[in-house]
Image 1 (cartoon, rainbow, N blue to C red):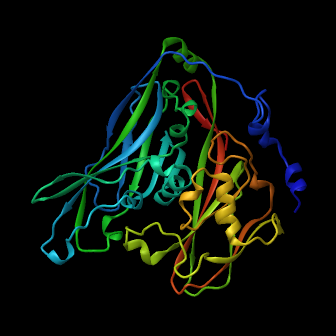
Image 2 (image 1 turned 180 degrees about the vertical axis):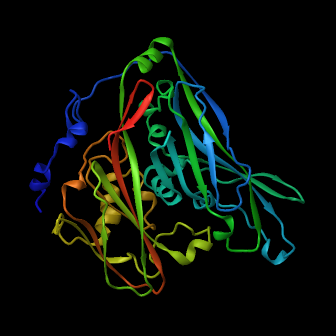
Image 3 (image 1 turned 60 degrees about the horizontal axis):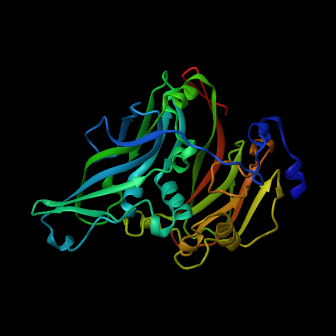
Length: 391
């Protein structure tokens, strides 16, 4: 399938993102600002038990006009056991917070606006965060005594409205909607690999609110609003030991897709959170020998080597590519700039009868999971205090 065919393969729904408003990627304007104030508030969970696989709920109070940031904060306590052989100098590491997250969702009423897995949040930070500005600081020792150690871990959740200030979530315009965050935790016992008890003592959100002056606030309340938001869909496929067959994954046919990202996870490292997110092949540089992406059975690229997808594509499309050479994160982009929420290229996969990611897997002697993430856009419309999604 030629690039010209993809370029001309459009439908009416694409106009929501492609129709010009006078500004393009080659023409922009400047902005002014009005009076505003910011403040941060702790949002406590509605639950008080966190140490088994559970779901934690948060009600987002409308105490500000806009919501611009959400940070997840966990307090973890280490309870010493009687088995001294396993204690040593063991400490909580950064990756544990990602590993404890099954999913985290931002919801408006019964509508799920965005959902992340812990794997996706880790990958997003790898792709987008400067190493010197990593949003997850080193786990900090809060206190030490004979009873145990306490750690505070903080992680900024990269919801779309947390990444760009002009995307801040307009709470003031949603008087008829309830805003919530839903966090599904993974049982600590499933990810620790030694005989030390860690208890999650507390889970909270640190929310940053913006308050507007009266004129700008009325502009939000009295007018219909429309936003482009980013959504992530993901699917997992198991790969058997010593599998060297061709793996075909049917990609869900969503509109407004701007990037495909996939990783292969060595399942045996899931009980070692010092190495929990090492996606590298144990023996080889790549997990696969060939990568093919097919629309209606036709290749969109020539038979490119896997290194094109985990090196060249990464360097071209993500700001932090130089920092994750050892991690096998693969991607294919349909956009000019994948780090921004404003669309710089989309492909509506629902135009095609079949969309397939075909991988020729190399054997490694261990079971693996293949996780495919589909980055896509949606249109969020707000009117008369209610929120609606286009797709």
